[in-house]
Structures are given as structure tokens and as C-alpha cells.
Image (tube, rainbow, N blue to C red; front, side, top):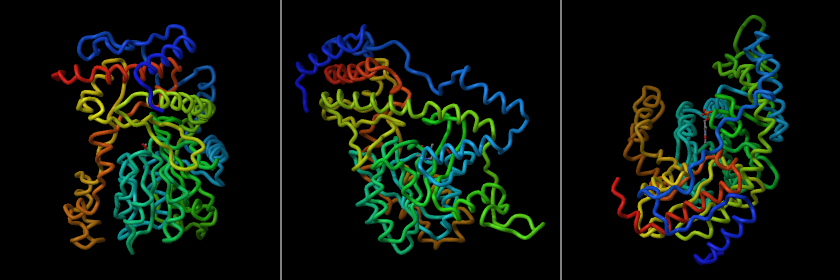
Length: 448
Ligand SMILES: *Cc1c(COP(=O)(O)O)cnc(C)c1O
């Protein structure tokens, strides 16, 4: 539905008086804050992470006072709760999401010489994890409307060396797992889901992270389930999870992995265990995750509806059969031509000046120096032919024009914590964007 300007004003006025005292519709004719006008909003946004001393501190203090700080019962309790919450047979916590991905990839037997197809619109950790295993990341372009990995592009990138797909549920919006699993099955590929932004997201009422062999989560401070640092692997595969456990604990025997008495570690492992006090923080945050997720979803849906009334931008589209999106970020696409040729950079400055924090999000990852560093490392030189490590050739073979456009021209993000505000807060966001749209011409005169 497209509104005329008059309808938009009317809708806002009605919603404003109906929903919230103190709502005030901003006449689009007032001066943009970036040009010295009055900002749409001066009050603050919900802070993150959330901490309620009464409910959150007793468990953490109990752990601290017990002196049992290294992995024990509280970690186990969190793992059981997270497995139940996600609908997965097993859960293993680790130090962070990055190491959850590394452990899952390594225990899925991904390593030197293997190609791993990965979302190109993602956080660096998704790709860093692949490089840590010695495998070769292969960047797959995105669907511009969903911001997710495009299954049709996955098909084009499969070679005889492809071993795994690492789809990322980026922004908390599910990737198209039904299509991805069909492709994986047809081509005998392992799927490890990067669900580090996907806590509680669902496709057909099935949680993301449970479609592939394994799902990996992050509990870093900024994430929707924060514990400072932390991560988890979930899977229904007992042998795989026993291996992950052993790997995360120096390679000591665990479950189906049995060693000889007094012969020590049974596999090449590492040490990436979560602590008890992190798990205690996680348990308190888990209590509120579902309620907060519900609020984010309600506010995001409302905001999306309002933004659809503003010309010059596109709101996100969900992949098929999504029953829950969890909005680690609220994205939309800015089209310069719909704003009289205004640059995204000035749009962002103008929106911030109106009191709405926002960012342009990710930068492209397929052509950056870290890849060159990996390709010139001793290990990579011993695992690959020289021409496979030709950086320019790699960049040429890994072009992702849609992702480039999202990163360089179109994407605008609002953070998850803003979605924990009120409906009137969402009105402020829409009003500020509308104000900028109506004043785009004046903003063209902005000289940084
Ligand atoms: C945060 C994140 C990670 C890494 O998690 P850490 O806990 O920070 O190591 C991986 N992938 C994505 C998409 C993320 O957002």
C-alpha cells in the first residue's frame, strides 16, 4: 500500500492521538536537525544489556561465592535449557560464537582443500571461522529483499571441492533453510548454520540452528541473549556432539569417544569452555528472551508498516515460511534516487541528528586484506596450489554485486535495543525518516 503525503499525515495523526499521549506529529516542513532545526527526538533509547539486580544477581553471586567458577553444573543447566528452548537434542556451550563455528566445522571434518559456501552479507566471524579450519571460503551473493544468502546463487558456486554450506541468519531474519537443505541433500553437503543472530527465529515453527548438522549461537554482549562472551553449538547428532565436547576440552575422551586408561587425550583438541558465572548471567537473560523477542517483533512489524508509507526506501522481506523473525537488527534499504539524489552518508547523518541512531552496517568481506594474509600463510601455501591462492583471481571469482550494493549504497540498520521501546518510539523513527524525505532537497546543501 502506498500512501499519499496527505494520507500519511492523517494516519500518523490518528495513530498518534490514539496510541500514546505526547505523540507529536512532526510537520515535514520544519528544518532538518542536521541543518540547525529542532530534532524529532531528544530522549534516549533503551540501553543494552538489561540487568535487574533483584532477579539477575542472586544466581551470579551464588556462583561467585561458591568458588566453582570453571565449567560445572550451572553451565550444564544452561546447556539443557538452551537445547530445550531450541528444540535440539544436545547443546554444548563454548567461549563465543566464532569458536562455536570453528569447532562445528572442524568436527564436521572440514579442513584444508575444502570449499565452504558462505553468506557474503555477514559479520567477519563467519568467514574467519572457515579460514581457521584451513578451508577455502566461497562467497555467495544475497537476495536484496531478504538480505539473506540466495539459494539460486549457492547452486552456481558448487564445485567438486565444495564440502559445506555455512548459511547465516543475518540480522535475525531466517535464511531460506528449506531451499538450502534441499540443495545440500542433492549435493551431499554438510550444513552448519551460523545462528549467531538467530536466537528463537523460526521457519514453519522449527527454530533456526536445527536444520543443518549443527547450529551455532553467540551470546556476546551486543547479542539478543548476552552474557559478555559466550557461544553454543546445538545438534541432534550424538557422535558429532561428543566430538565437539572432546574438542572443546583439550581432546579428552567424552561419551562415545573412549580412550585407554592413563593415555590422555584422544583427539587434537583445544580449550574453549564457558565459565559458571557466564552461564549464570545467561540463565537470567534467557528468562526474558522470549518476551523481549515478542516485543521486538511487534515493534518491527509496526515500524515496517509505517515505513512502507514513505517513498524512496524498501523494507525487508522475510524468506518463505518464516514464523518468527527475531530482529537482531532492523534493516531497510535506502534508495538515493528516491531522496532527490541525497547520499546515504548524509541520510544517516541527518537521521542521527534527528535523534535516531542508525548505521550503514556491514562492509564487503570478499576483497579484504585478511584473505591475503591467510593465502600467504605457511599453512595455506602447503595446502593449496599457487593459483588457488592468487588473491586477484579469488576476488574476481567471488564477486557479489547484490551484497556490494547493500553494503556500499543501500542498507540502513537500527539496533535491536531500539525495538524494545514503545510504539511512540517507532513513530519517532518513521517521522524522522519522513521528515528527511520531505526535506531531501534542502539536505543536498549540507556541507560536512
Ligand atoms: C556475533 C557473530 C558471530 C560471532 O560471535 P562471537 O560470539 O562474537 O564470537 C558470528 N557470526 C555472526 C553472524 C555474528 O553476528
